Amino acid sequence: MAQLIAFNYFYRDSVIHSLDVRIKFVTMILFSAAIGRITSPNQFIGVSLILLAAMVLSRLPFAELFRQMRYFGLLILGIIVIHSFSVSGTKIAPIPGLTVEGFVLGLFFSWRLFLVIIICVIFTGTTALKQLRKGIEWFLHPIPFLPASRIATMINLVFVLIPMLFDQASEILDAQKARCIEVNRNPIRRIKYLTVPLLLQTFKRADELIMAMESRCYTEERTRPVFNIKMKDWIFLSLSVSIMAVVFF
Amino acid sequence: MIILQAEKLTHKFPDGTVAIKDIDLAISEGEFIVIAGSNGSGKTVFARHLNGLLKPTSGKILFFGEALAKNIINARKQIGLIFQNSDSQIVGQTVAEDVAFGPENLKTSASQVAKIVAEALEAVDLSQYAKQNPQLLSGGQKRKLAVAGVLAMKPKVIVFDEPFTGLDYPGVRQVLKQLVELHKSGHTIVLITHELEKTLAHADRLVVMDKGRIVLDGLPEEQIYKVAQYGIRLPEIGERGVGAMTWLS
Ligand SMILES: Nc1ncnc2c1ncn2[C@@H]1O[C@H](COP(=O)(O)OP(=O)(O)O)[C@@H](O)[C@H]1O
Ligand SMILES: [Mg+2]
Image (cartoon, rainbow over all chains, first blue to last red; front, side, top):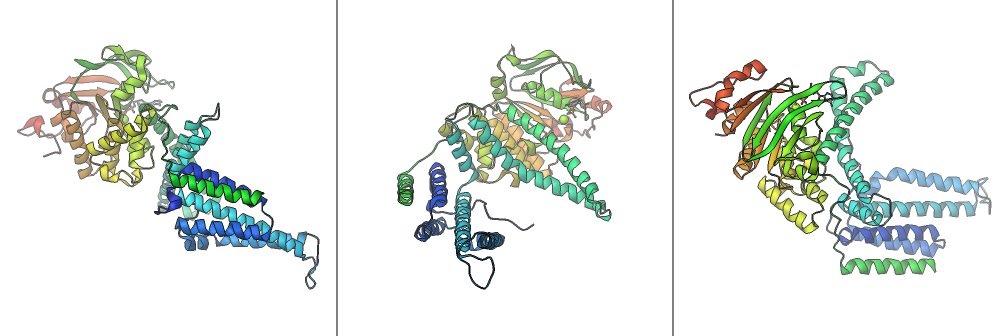
């Protein structure tokens, strides 16, 4: 199976990696909000340059990431084309329906989309799941009636269980291939023979997992995550807040 | 001193299966007890009563003379249970995170958790894997990880439910060595297995279950001759008798 690496975590020794996860969260949200607000080409270029700097700082393998995300390019092209023809305005002579305003609108729209994707790639690429979980727990904790630690545990379990489920599914498939399931091309039959045992095993596994967690005293009142916030986190935060201030006002 | 005692323990499942019936068993502090029995004889169901995961239909479990059900969290801390399938008790994304799960449930402070985890991993010789994904460990190492997870709770009693299933020769030896060391360091050991030839030399006592009841209970060298009638393979008994029944040379 081809390894899909976009939106995966890569361990690198970089400034962005070592930032406090909460600061990264806030910055990500600020930047995404700003991207929604910017309108002038100068602002677009400014934000793009900042993100470019973040990409370089993060030391993620962007060449490979872009190669894998090249199909997004089609989507972006599609957006530009649709906008170009569906907005009325100054006509461009040879092609009927094509307008300058439409083209510009489409260009900005897809540029925004692209920038948001870049933000997500940087965030997920530089944040280990454990950090992410800690951050989520910290942000949700003050909200009353919301079981922050349960949600954090659930997120954690999902990421533990999903690879196991894939392993299990491929084992079931292999066992059935060994018994020539491929001779019969009826897809419904194949889905049935995959999902029924997979579901049964999953329920059994979940049951065992619950038992194991209970026997290790699982509660929702757990040790709170600790953070080690440093000077550079504050510097980073003040930098991004001031950039946003410039964009907004 | 009797640490754990079952009194007329009976468990009937909602579907009518009587998994264990009228079990009386007193386990002394520091004892190494082997519980054998054919498949379906009720060993796992019994083990799950020992730390309160299953509630008896009738009868009770006493821990230091007090009803175990009274303080279930304390019981789960003090009586560690290693499950038959070690894959399904892994809850962490790294080895260290998995070991931390128990102490975090007890709201131990984060710095204390780190210390406990380091000690537990040291005790089972897995320190160098602390940051690794647990799914990448070998079978024997996974069992040892489960042991570390239990050790992090500082238990007095450790119950092993068929810990050798699916392990190769080095794996069995790894786990067995761990078991013997835990016993030496003062833990009370309850080992559920039918592989007597691998383990019996280390046991102080042999208990055999059949159809949910205890049918044999006593010194290994006295009881060993009677096991065959209950569906357990009678190991070859040489000149050294039960003393030779170990895979540790
Ligand atoms: N959840 C359940 N519901 C109904 N019957 C069960 C359940 N779990 C176990 N049993 C039955 O209880 C008996 C004892 O099972 P178990 O303790 O797992 O045996 P083993 O000695 O192999 O560990 C078996 O007959 C089994 O079918
Ligand atoms: Mg069993």
